[in-house]
Length: 169
Ligand SMILES: [Zn+2]
Ligand SMILES: [Zn+2]
Image 1 (cartoon, rainbow, N blue to C red):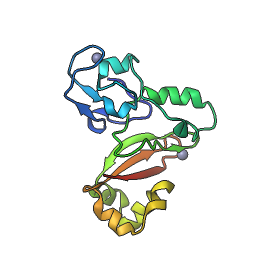
Image 2: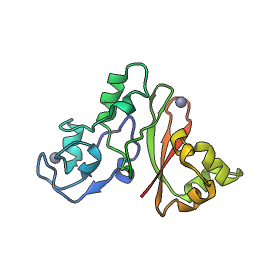
Image 3: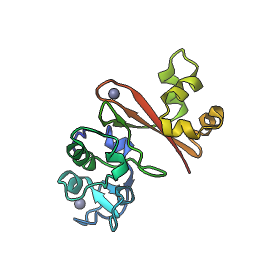
Image 4: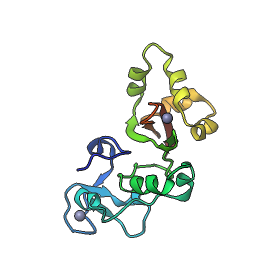
């Protein structure tokens, strides 16, 4: 298994499925193909994925978030495992590059990371603009983490900024 430029801790953070790899037919360690956003992909084993046999579709609205060398960066991103989004791909960008996906956080992760700060305020401060725009009551969103809401966490590799995207079932 590679070390991925934009995806941390694949064992924990990627979505795996029991099906057989649609390329080599083995069924060990297969990524769930549904998150590749490509027709006909059901499952891809890590070894086929690492060889570049299949890549993740990166939509134009994600690419448009990067200004310089976008094709090079998007090509790299397409060889990182996909985030298991509940809704659409919302890969975050900071310092003109894709951010590192560090996983889904539960309330406890935010509490530990907030230190002495008020945790709900801290959580709100980390939300990406698209999530903030949809918040009616931050306490309701906070209480829903771990139930119908998933909090995806990204980190900038240059400035270490953290951004959180919430998606609900
Ligand atoms: Zn395979
Ligand atoms: Zn940054």
